[in-house]
Length: 421
Image (cartoon, rainbow, N blue to C red):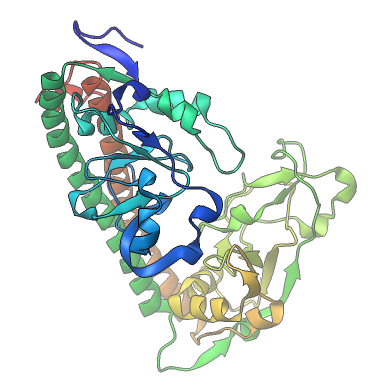
């Protein structure tokens, strides 16, 4: 850790708790609190979904007053520090809002009642600084669901200046963060509006209207399904055969790097992916099942998988037009409705169902014109999206720099001094 100003120390979170019994506590475990105890009204239960990164998310769950009285050791009061012990972002914490009312924490939610000698906001923001996130990376455990145990959370290092300095720096810090968060929210809102605009463009140019329609089966001569290679493997090297994963067809564009190497003994060259192929994801999440991608330039020796389908188009069908028509909201609704499977995490679309999807009828020259017009509009949308996304990344870098400066004693009112990050 870098040197700190005179009068500062670094202390574990445990040393900042109030001088009362169970000032730091987890929620009740096991049968003491289950979903069966939840009621329509009454004292609140603070769950993992309530604890945002510096913000309390007001997702409501209640228990009866009688049950609350038996769990008062886990009670939450205004300005208590709430820390999630489970999740991708660790440590993640917020302060209990004054409007919360009577409440307790649930399991995996840590309540820290802080000493009056420390500003709760100072401690909360300390959880967001890059140094403590790196510290947590080395201390968390668990596969799939990262966790920081209560013992580790008690040891989170907190740089601590005198109380007056904490309060002064928090005021500057919140001024900077509020402005940065405004810019971030503006960039996010812009990207969301562009997503809606793209959907509107797809619907206007490729969606079903009052005109004639055709089925996908009318536009193709067949569908070629890939084969499974089984097991897991690293991505194929340049001179190796590879087979595409579901993620290669998930994001609206073909991602050839999403593949795994396969032994040469399992290779059938008939399933090699070629430039210009229109592929559809046979199995994916409910949002992406049936998602089409148009293959551009692609490395050799890359194979279709059992979760990918290659559409074999009739000569008069423009591949780019059909790609966009299958992305249109009207087509996506049909595909989602026809997909089968009990879990949203993996749905399937049969070839029969896919071939029955109805699309607008368009002559070849109209197909080419619509595809070209949409490509030009989409390019404009992407330029704005990239600028907004660049703005979000810039804000994130500045936010990290502001937090680092605050907890090293170098923060000033002038955020422009950090603009070189």
